[in-house]
Length: 308
Image (cartoon, rainbow, N blue to C red):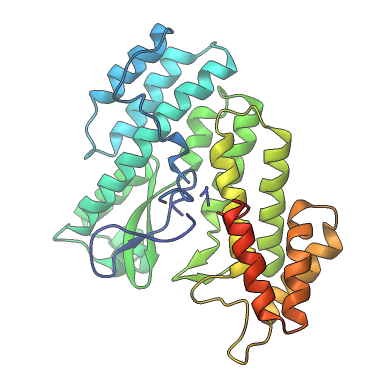
């Protein structure tokens, strides 16, 4: 879930061995583009708007070990920016987001080191009423403050529950920021990859690429447009190159059924899209067995910065 986007769109190795975290939604493609909120503002209170400086100072006073600090930061945001212009609220939200991401990573590291951590218990295989009191309290504290427990490959980690963002920030941010955050939350709830394998349908993968392509085209002045563009390029890269465990070409060097479906759906439903125009010659080369030409074209796309 950690949701991301935006979407590096790869798993982040947090500690060692097998403990891996899914990118958070905003930082997922930069890693992990959720560091759309990655700014230097947390360390440099130098805004002309005094409200920004007040918020930076407040956030700097919070540690990275207590889940309840997410709620404290959200409440302070509401106190300071209620009634302010949407653009102001957007900037302040990015300050919160940067802190939220760092807090999330810190809580996950703490979670990994917990002596009483039981992955079987934490993923809900034990009925809530039968949870050990300490574990129940721990889960409640996470859930009440914008975090959740997620399982991957038999291990658990702390992730963001971005419904928390909806609760505290949607009423303040600009309409464009709200649309952006809604999409990140949607993708955070249905991550596209697990264990280096694509786990959404071919049509869903294409739809996400097109969604981000259109969002970028229509919102060039958006404060987080760079992160949105990273998400778009990251999906396009996956669409063209696959992942470590979901290959474009199968073990007999033929175009896989998954990507054949994706490319046909893209050309049929979104023929005028930039993605369709980029995929078309690549798809043609692969269908005709010209793998070398397809690879050469991919190298051109990389040099031109077309993909992530």
